[in-house]
Image 1: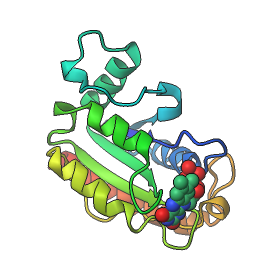
Image 2: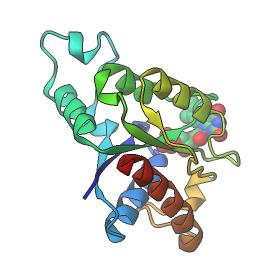
Image 3: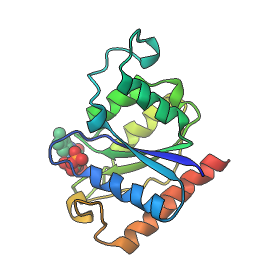
Image 4: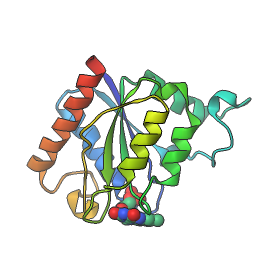
Length: 180
Ligand SMILES: Cc1cc2nc3c(=O)[nH]c(=O)nc-3n(C[C@H](O)[C@H](O)[C@H](O)COP(=O)(O)O)c2cc1C
């Protein structure tokens, strides 16, 4: 079974986007689509970037674990909240930490926001950054607007049927790239 990691990057108090990560994790597991795991950047608690992991003399256990999990994954889903039209700092921080781990890795995107536009701007910088790192950027992002009303705190979608349809299309597209 393919391994998919879901990166949940928000470390903000009262964060909402983690709900989308929980939803996707449950969706993948319940439908037996892949072996899924959430990589929660709140747990990793990385310091601000000072050097790529590959160039660090004594990397932290957290950084080594994160690297290994991305390396071992067949595909990655990145939940990407939009802050001021771009990537949130914790996500860019974690992406920059790694190098070869991203190379040829299929990565699918879930741009989210609590507004009406579903992170429509963050996707531009996020895709470009992953492309620069030679990841395989999977087309057809799952955009989620109005986060607070889209899921409850346990990641249960308000409109399950509609959300499942969109999630299915995202995950199946990612799986196609994994298999190809
Ligand atoms: C610093 C900051 C900047 C934001 N900028 C945007 C923005 O440019 N576009 C947007 O749609 N929402 C913006 N938002 C609203 C976020 O989409 C909303 O807070 C969302 O819940 C963020 O995810 P999080 O709760 O998991 O941190 C911003 C929020 C913060 C805290």
